[in-house]
Length: 165
Image (cartoon, rainbow, N blue to C red; front, side, top):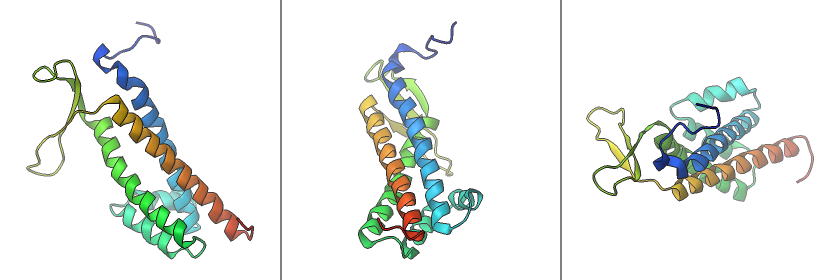
C-alpha cells in the first residue's frame, strides 16, 4: 500500500473532500475564536483556552461580547448569533467526526450512514444519513465563523488602539 492509496471503502469516496475541508475549517474557526476570546478578555491565549474548555463556554463568550463597549450594536447581535450557531454546528461536526460511519445493508443499501452513542445514561443511538452536500454546507459555515471571529478580533484591536474603522 502506498501513501497515495485510499484506505476507506469506495462507498465513502464522496465524503473524503468535504470531511477533510470540515476538519481544516473547523480547526481554523476554533483558532479564530480563541484569538477573539483572548482579545475580548485582554488576556493571552492560555487564559482564553481556559474559557473555551469550560462547560458554559458559549454563555461566557456571549457575556464577554455583550460587555465589550468597543463592539457596536449590530456587530454585537451578529457575534451573539454567530457564537450560538458556531456551538450548534460544533455538535453536528462532532457527530460526523466521532460517530460510527457504516454502509447500510438494510435500507438504501450501500449508502453511508452514521450511528452515535450519546454519553448520557439511558440515551438512544443517534442515527443520521448525511450527504456530501450536508458536510460541504457545514464546512462552509465554519469558514464563515472563521471570518467572523477573525474580522471581529481585528476590528476590536483597531478600535482599542485608537484607529477608526
